[in-house]
Length: 381
Image 1: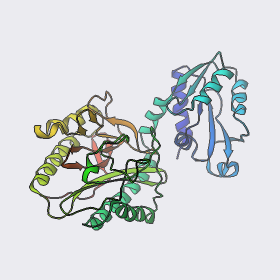
Image 2 (image 1 turned 45 degrees about the vertical axis):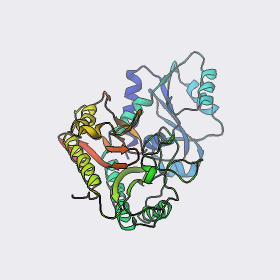
Image 3 (image 1 turned 30 degrees about the vertical axis):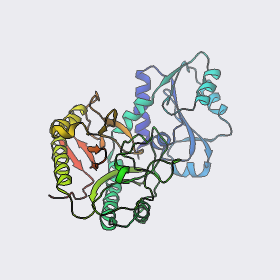
Image 4 (image 1 turned 180 degrees about the vertical axis):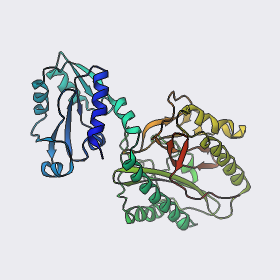
């Protein structure tokens, strides 16, 4: 991991925006810029070397990180004292999307004449372009996600509960080296989704519309104790993590002999998905990807694309150190795909009182095309 180059890139951004220094708190950003996930605060001045302040563990941080100036941190004021040592601290860059309000207030009080600038998006844009090591880790993670879908295919049968299926999936994830703990950037919940019956369309507070029922109203998403029955649809949507990097993979199964309606709708979504995947390469507007699915889907299914009524979700997202990163695939995203983006592309239809169909695969965007890194089989009807 070449963290020195990453810091140089961030410094260049800070200089362009006339920001004198940046303070990094968020754990995945700490790892990205320091190669350690210990509890630290990173100070990056544009005209000096970075300083890594360690709450815990100091010795392990020194072993793991190439940052030269590593110091024990007893209290946050030590970071602010270091900033005061610099001749210029008129403008300070912060991760406004994740920064605690109390920390923000403390900084305002200590530096009343400084301008506090949001650098969240710039950091996320840097992270959205993966290097070779990151891509290698994501390929490894994707292979485990495929194995999980193999297990799903084996164990989904009448009489098994969603929770029992979840246990088999959990075992497989751990067995292949993915500790089932992944990070979300904008929310803290980490369920994998197993949905059947009304769990395919019943809504909850979890941002993905297709979220499963959950096992209690206190955690209203993910697998439930519901028993899977003959003639039902089951969606399994899992994330795996290798060396900190995430894969996100979903398949839709039918228990028993698929109905004609299921076959028709499955094929319709699959074919629309293929048309969108043909778009994948650097420079393609992201909104074109979304619209390619919509215009190639039969009109009677378009109103159920990514949800129903006013409850809709995006068609995909970047993945990496977190499960939800830039770029986001929506009908009105203004960005274009960039070489090095890794996206989880998940077109779906959700039809109340009937069910849902969801396909999710991970793609590395290249200059003239793409590499699909999750490749679990589809039904062939």
